[in-house]
Length: 474
Ligand code: SAM
Ligand code: SF4
Image (cartoon, rainbow, N blue to C red; front, side, top):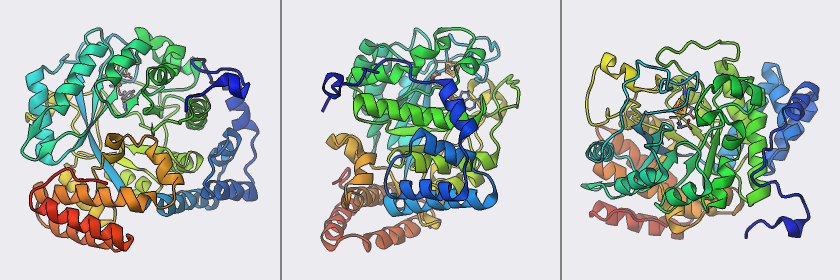
């Protein structure tokens, strides 16, 4: 159902900037987090209700190990109760690093003359995607700088190209996008190519800080970026991802900014963002930023747990910017997607280069260089269920996180069986060493938790996968 402001008699807020920095600072400064209040807020979230800005402020202001542990515990309980142990895997593919913007924190900024500029040609994209498929990847996010070369038509072309690349049993079943904001027509063009999620990160929700970091190019327009996903919605893309780059401004402000953005999209379009990303700034070529707002590991862990509680039915994405140790810990607080086998240097999935050759081709440094195989092996060892599921998106079941969250039995009927089927494919086609054995054991443990009928039809599909069929799902 489309949003109809006339019917609800509330002002139409679509395409209007929605961040009021004074309101956010007022909440941060004046919300007192006493123990009982923090517990009530956690209980509200565990009762499956999204938190208000004020309630989120209570959590960001809470201090002392005891209370913070209660927040982390609440996030863990919510994740376990509602989502179970699935973790969806993906990889980023950097298509081009030409850029007309000058974001102070990014290795691709126009003023960085040391950066080697490159846009992958079709043949190179094919080689990269085949290499990713050889590792077992099924879900990619294509990433682009902001440049006239990366027009909506070009982005749509690369998406279609990627969907068409098949090698052995390898294929990419979901292509997401992280690129510059477009106008409505541009979003429509990209939408028609069959993308999954369109991500645009606001970087910082604080308007003045934003102006300070974004010196030139189109990106310097805060409002145009803030309303970009409204335009995506108007163009029919209802699967959007938001994010903030932690380290640019006070992390508490950014958490409230993300929650405000979620409320805005829900109020205007009846659907919140599909995912929230919370990258932290990492070292990039000639990066020389003030560390005033650096987000410590402790604050980072706390903020992931708070986001889980604040927006319980939105997917949370954690990337290889973080170390394996940090990733291991925050996975427990409700992260739903991670990347594995990530390489950021353009063209490096199919070519091997040394550190020095790569240095000027990457946007920033990653801290988890493990292969997809290693990441999957560790997930299995820690009792997670790795998933490459793309079923909801292909069946037109949009808003799947909301369904997972609110439709009783949805996870056991769809998500777990589909995770099991995609893991079975991975084991048959790509698993090395004792990962296969660990994987089949994990599958058995998870099958036992399903209704007998669902378990039986999942087992029947696993047998068909073993005989060579692929892409079976519920
Ligand atoms: N050019 C598009 C844009 O700016 O929206 C595409 C995105 S950029 C290639 C992907 C994201 O990487 C940015 O939105 C930003 O949040 C993040 N990023 C940029 N520099 C970074 C750094 N030094 N460390 C960590 N993340 C960074
Ligand atoms: Fe360009 Fe995006 Fe980097 Fe900014 S963050 S310099 S827009 S690639």
